[in-house]
Image 1 (cartoon, rainbow, N blue to C red):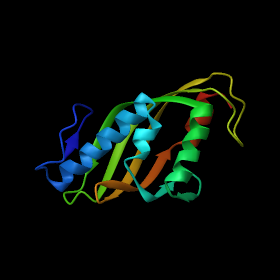
Image 2 (image 1 turned 120 degrees about the vertical axis):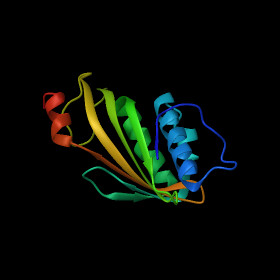
Image 3 (image 1 turned 90 degrees about the horizontal axis):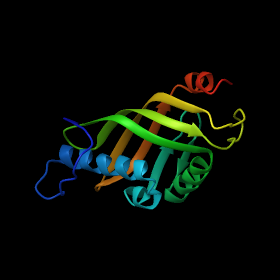
Length: 150
């Protein structure tokens, strides 16, 4: 089932697949609104965050710390969001374009000078008990580096 951004139906009388899609719609709406607190409320306490070309972090507090760093270094808005979910609602994926500005130099990356970028990205999710329990991010780091002229 494919869903685009829009109004959020309630969880009442929906299939597991629809529940998963609504959960992801809310997650990305909160991301685009800069509402990290509401976004984190959608995560399981023991969420696993697989960072693009990096390691994995465990727990909501680690995810919160990741977003503190991200919000310091980047201003991003996700567009052209397409969501997909399994029938049983336990697995999902998202594809989108990240439109961003590199605000402050991130650890181990080139100097930030306000460069802008538009980057294809994707994410894979696991859900249980109407919470996101795993987020795996993917984007092409080499493409991003070329766009910021590193």
